[in-house]
Length: 84
Image (cartoon, rainbow, N blue to C red; front, side, top):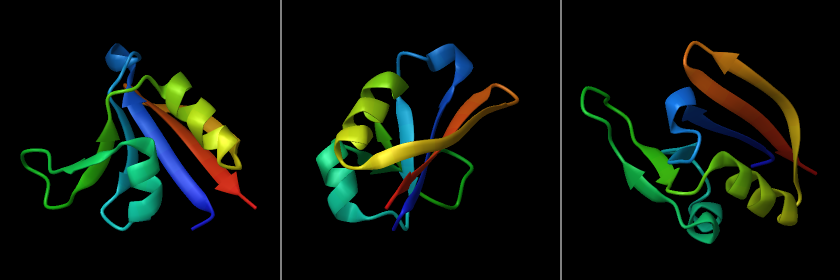
């Protein structure tokens, strides 16, 4: 899975960080220390870590991921990463 989206709410810049959806690579999620949870009202799961986005980005860079783009969507910050 070469692409990965991570995000966080602007008011939660110190964490937690959403690092994957229910179809994400379980091995990668384990390396990041992510736990799967379902938010009330959603019918899907997401993986979260308690780390700040900067820490997650550092970990992903060491695993060969590079940031392709970053944007703000409403009150959410989103990074798109790719691994060769």
